[in-house]
Length: 254
Image (tube, rainbow, N blue to C red; front, side, top):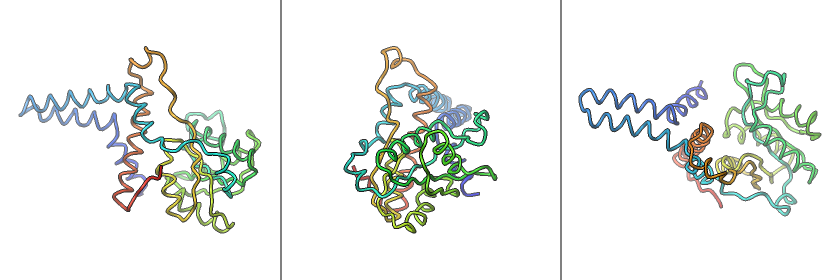
């Protein structure tokens, strides 16, 4: 129940939902205070346009990409690789039970590539809502059938990043693992690395999926729906970081 409430509140605080709600509030205020209300409505709708502009979305995503790619020296010190789920893909029923979103597949592909380099054991973490198949099990199947990797541990209960860290810890610690290479997107790594460190692990960040360089001049000038998605994702991540800072002393090592 708490997870659903948290996700609902988060969605309401992110664009474009928040912008649209503020625009309606502005129109309501305009009934009595015309200039103030209309200004709020116009600025709210303009914020959607600004966040849909590739230079803005790119800057927001890159502000979270604080960790460089993992080095061979760091990999040599790790005892295991941990890959975080990225959500199911209910829009791809042709994949059968292996419903992994594109982001989850990208993370998994990179984690298996690191496993091939090092031979390290791999943990996949991710649960599911409503009795659906846990994401970690789908990741295991994809890793072993399609990518020729091998998943040693599957954590199947976590519904968010905090759960990924807290519920993976007992599995790893029971095997004597204290040093991990953590695989997730670059924009997600600041919060993820902090949460796993809070469980007592020495974390070697292995970020992937960095924001691409700017495209053609036309692509940089024209707003795009995909840029709005990236902006919303980055702002959601910053919201999570601010919540962590409010809940405890938080410092992102760079």
